[in-house]
Length: 283
Image (tube, rainbow, N blue to C red; front, side):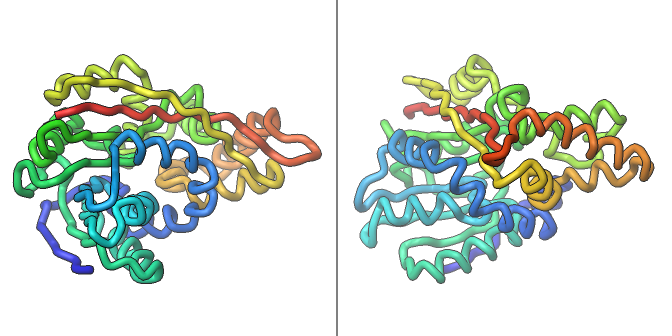
């Protein structure tokens, strides 16, 4: 495995920070449990097979990178790219620990993919496309590097309303006056959460045979208190947008979040619904 650096320029996105990389890593086990079915569907839709060359855009800490690498086997190859070197460092560690030899890393801006045209059998992007300021530009770049008839598949959050474990804290923070613009990227999480918008975004990227699939997820914790702890510890940017609030308002906000979460808890634990969308297009 090799790691390359391709200077993408400065970014203000919180998702490029070392702080968020550590938060993201702490949420890995829960994230894997929630997204198992969606991850499998994403890789199946990308038509990964033994020997495939795959580009993983916005790879983060590499959860899906490892899955893709196992799908394509030792004769295949996965290039994991991300704007955050901190994220990719953790991904590289995970690859080493897994004993995989068919993965490389490269720091790269998803809106400026500097790779050869027609050089990958498939492109995947999990939980990244909606965070890009210009997702159409990113998709155009992905389309350029995938081979003719190749697939580009992106997994994004559905709507805020359908994802209360994320939507409830954000809605309450807005009610208390938190300024999401101070955490670039955080305010974009649900921007592609409508099926029609995601379809239109793929079509604007030049794809045909565009389709969008909705996948239901479940968020499970041992208790409401455990769900609150995980939200505080693993939801990127939340603590930062709450920091400017007064101590009293911050306490009230968390009390309200706990109250809203309580509807998903009982003596058996905490279980809340969720939904992601998977967009797919063919070159």
